[in-house]
Image 1 (cartoon, rainbow, N blue to C red):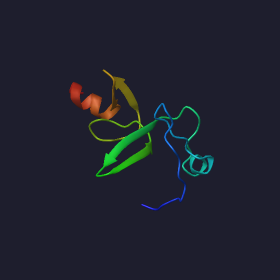
Image 2: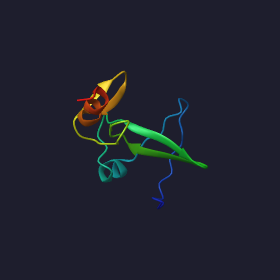
Image 3: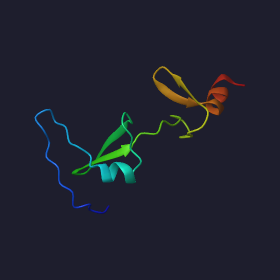
Image 4: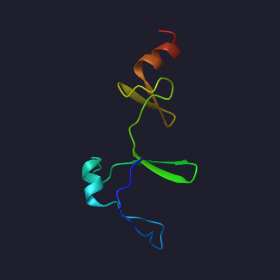
Length: 80
């Protein structure tokens, strides 16, 4: 992990602003979803990319009960 040297304060609503330079480099657009993870004492933000809950594929996704599942895994579960 490398430091950017950028420091931001958390506002009264718990928000921080991601600098435009980082958003450009990471291709984060307005309304994009970010996944929030923790590791030890770190908070990690990652651009959210939906994937199949079973095989992690990012192709041919469908939503089922709030979860993503790919066509291949769906067919496998249905016994096709």
